[in-house]
Amino acid sequence: MPMNWIHRRLCRSERWAEAVENSLLPWALDGVDLGADILEIGPGFGVTTEVLARRPGWVTALEVDRDSVDYLRDRFGDRVDVVHGDGARMPWPDNAFSAATCFTMLHHVPSPELQDRLFAEARRVLRPGGVFAGTDSLPSLRFRMIHLGDTMVTVDPETLPDRLHAAGFTDVEVAVGGRRFRFRAHRG
Image (cartoon, rainbow, N blue to C red; front, side, top):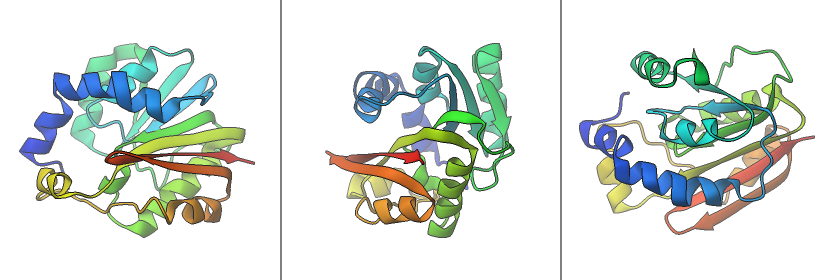
């Protein structure tokens, strides 16, 4: 289901862009080497993509929403490869990327089973030693209000390590900070 009007407005705001650049991504990626071929799963309006595209390496963005794909292609031109597709059925061969990332989007995947398929697909498209890193939000009244009418299936950070191990990842780390959590895991 598409994001509601309030959610879309917040995700396109300058305030959110500043928070992503100055707080969210530095915390999420502190000490993480993404390598040269980065996959971003579910970029939405591309606020996180903008920051990733300024880092060394090439960014490929996988977006399930057709309108968002068109918007992202217009926004980034040839700076980012934007692909229309589903994170639970990625269109790349095994070992295609040095890193896979997803930021504040897992709760938009409509079921835990599809989230687990996304984790397995992220592992599959990573090269051996590649990292899967990202963030998501913890549930709160404010978070629920922003998502009225949206798909919202929150991820429990306490069960996430077992889910990532089940997908084949090693060296799984999950940390809670404020109203969100970050995770990192490696393909062995």
